Length: 548
Figure 1: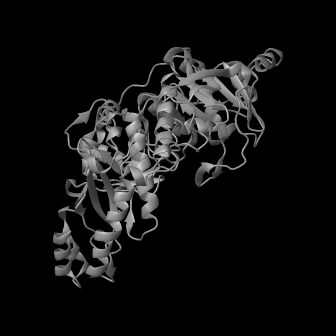
Figure 2: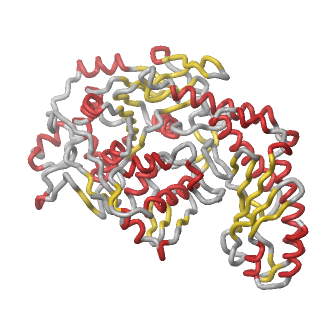
Figure 3: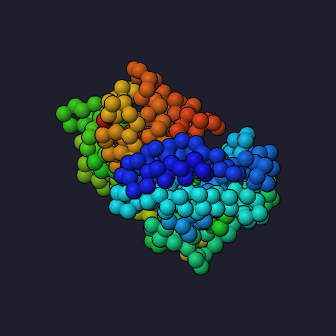
């Protein structure tokens, strides 16, 4: 502290850039403080700092003996506590978690203690350093927050334990899905509706979800015990019902539950296959050498669809590409909402078949391929469908949502199929191959970086700038936090350091995203672990990507 004070007095009333002289390590009485990056001016991103506190000073060393998932949740809880404390002060900010409990770098546990990684806005008068304000911020306000966020007596330990146990329960429930042939599990009394389109908190006074008896199953959670809920089977499942009755709300809850949620979210006992990928139509996106031939062929002017590329894909083409890319990235389940799909990709009804001959229609609709996805590729499909009954012919399970409650109408759907047989002709071949793996040119990624330096900018979940390219991500609904995009950028940066073509990029990213993934990352506090599904989805949307 004395060293820091002396340095500050030396640069008092100097130009703001003189703050760079503060970089380095400082020994406080009960923690070590590191200033890693100082902002160039008051309007630049805040300075990056770290504080490391020994376990012996926290009374929290017992957490070292807990599971990796328990520790992940405990780090998340401490980050939230720090964020709440920092909110009362100006100038200090940590990467605040949302409704999901992700593996983050804002708080890190090591053998010696707890490290907090956060940002500090260094005070100024215009562009002039005010040493007295900075000294108060760094030697009084900041230490107070650090100490309160990392000592047992200042934390609600019982709430922390509930937080961590809820995460361990979700991990255990998700691990049981495969054993019971389930794509997802929705616990009784879950709250599905959200507060608003821009607020992921649970809706107050929402109708709690209760599983229909025919789909009810009990799974075992290590802390809560047996939990009853609805099992969504693998295979082809349709969610049907009238408008505003909760079809898309159920799908949204399932798609978000590839990640764990915090207690009180309402979805903390909903879990989904961790590889489930939501796909949709996305007009105007780029496509890089994707095999679309199972769904689109015989294009005008003889354009090849076995290795299709475009910088301006149509709705149907983009959705077919997304489907193939998701399977290539390892998805075992696809989630689709009719409302955000291209209608001609989903269905071509009897009348349209009669009007337009198959030879004149290059698109083979999903309704004619979805059973092959299930039977030949072992891919499950969960569909929200309100306008086409032709999918009833291939559905294994049909769930009707009525007043936000689920009703198993599978038997009734089979009766409807028998009494109202379709006369539409089946289109496409009777076989389906898994999409090929496309190597990626690492040099194309590196070429986007000026002087080979890392440049990633992320403001929210809708876009990411990597070097010179801005990637539009508005359609990616399963990105849980913008911090995952920071990590994706770093993974690309690591990949770009190699030479030649990476033969299996999804495998390379999976190896990077191991249990010790953040060891290859910088000491940044705004990184969160993504799935390989999202890493590849973002990469596929980079217009300068080069896939072979």
